[in-house]
Amino acid sequence: MRLTRQHVARVHRAIDDPGPMERQKLVPKDWFTSTARAIRAELCPGEPLWVFAFGSLIWRSPIEFSGRRVGLVRGWHREFCLGWDTRYRGNPEQPGLMLSLDRGGSCKGVALKIEAERLDPDLVTLLEREPPITPRWVSVITQDGPLRAIAFVCARNYPGYVGGLSTEEIADRLAVAVGFWGTMAEYLRNTVEHLEELGLHDRHLWRMQEMVAERIEGLAGAEGTVGSTLSRP
Image (cartoon, rainbow, N blue to C red):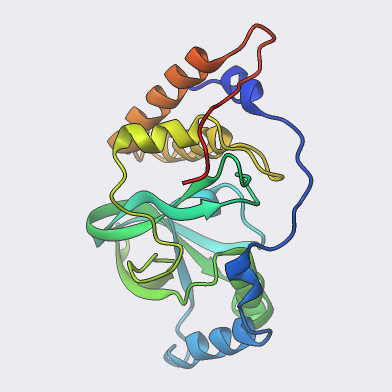
């Protein structure tokens, strides 16, 4: 992999948590529990709840899962289209773009099963960790047969949807964005690394990590840190 931990270290700097972003402040207090109830109501008796993971949920989950299956979802593809992140892996001067599922194509990822005995609290915890987007039911094709799962799809009418950016523009942002959780470069590297470990080669992300590494090398200053003239979009 071209994007190394040394590249990530060049971008990293300590940033205090600025608090919820504006769209997070607009979420009603009972949204998480009511959304969890609505999801559970759609399960058949005895049906387990699976969650389709395509990004950081694979390697940074807030809950323990009782099962996992590598699988394919058709009709959606992995894309940096969720923005602008000015808190977790971005800031107002250098906002980040997170991965989500956008319409079209297909996506290989991991279906994760929530423990039945902890379905209610774990589902709420998961919803609180993800963007405030109502999950969508998708069909996941696995070696053990198809299964139904929820996925955090970024609908194009969602206020946080970012489309129309070129690969070069996305790489420009990922190379410099940093928030209180860390950098977008680290987020990209971890996602690519864990997908590869699962035997899931994403050509788009592979090319992206190469481009981000190139940009970090070009932006590195004399003291080994990265500066940027990129402004908020």
